[in-house]
Image (cartoon, rainbow, N blue to C red; front, side, top):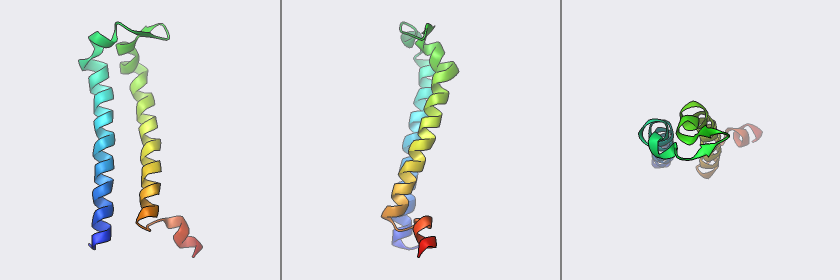
Length: 89
């Protein structure tokens, strides 16, 4: 693997680790670990800890998918691995 591909892969792993950390904090942290503290707040009539466990974590997961796609498209362009530009050449 050449140096350019190694840097690309390393940056991809950094993105994955960061997004998975957010995913873990939201799903396990907000839904289980911090639920007692979060329950003192209300969102839409529900306790915030309950809301995160039932709905909020799902919204965050979907947002993380869009963020990952955006980051990878930017990374592809940075390292010139963009498939759309290759097909247009």
